[in-house]
Amino acid sequence: MRIIEPGKSTFDSPSAITIGKFDGVHLGHRALLSRTRDLAAEIGGQAGVVTFDRHPMEVLRPGSAPPYLTPLMERLSLLDSAGMDFCVLLRLEDGVLGWPAAKFVEDVIVRTSHAIHVITGEDFRYGHDRTGDIPSLTAAGIAAGFAVHVVDPVQVEGARVSSYAIRNALTAGNLPLAEAMLGRRYEVAGAVEQGKQIGRTIGFPTANVKYDPQIVVPKEGIYAVTVDWGEGERAAAASLGRRPTVEKEDAPIWLEVFVLDWSGDLYGKWLRVTFVQRLRDELRFDSLDHLQAQIEQDVETVRSVLG
Image (cartoon, rainbow, N blue to C red; front, side, top):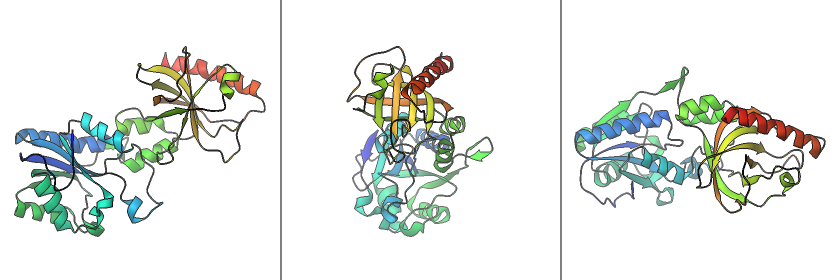
């Protein structure tokens, strides 16, 4: 997938494009992407996506942006795997949020994307202060030569699929609902850092991933997960939380992973963690012996869950 900046198109073939933040690249987004691919194939053109490098609220109202389901590079990777040929990446430092709706249409849809088809959700807005809407986009398309297609929302278990709904499911500990809306298991990734090595002293050495504060935190607790650092998936038990037995209440959140039936050094490696099932809440124990006994039980539960 080629990354293109507005006004710097590297092709002149017609395209079908869809526009949005695409955080999570969930089933609702995939309905848009699928329709975009289909329409691009009909015209023998390119399938493209227009998105932002970060959430607009980070500029409009600093500190109020929701946590991400997928950081930028993960989002671009998912869009690529969904079959997009190009991505027009709107960088907020370039002032794109101040563009009038007409400039957005001319610079992004017409001159950069060469769009013949524009695919949106029913609540699509664009331009400065979100003044552009579907009726105005349709009128602009009649003048400029592109058609607007509105895709209906996707529902799962009677609820509309959205990034907001998935974040709520994760923070409530409803991993199955989040997975159903995403269309895949929820994953996070990060570098393994040096910890206090307390797990090593009780027979359960863990890989410690300091949680990115910009990423949504699922409900704290113990999880059955799989991990991959480039050598294939392995079963693991994970603790997501503030390690109440050994840390103060205001400690930062860590993701601690014990890889089953494996030993070695993971320091500095990039670890991808896939959440499979939430097992229990995080608990405070009055001794490391009691913590060790509980971890032994958790590991056996993980073996049962992951086979």
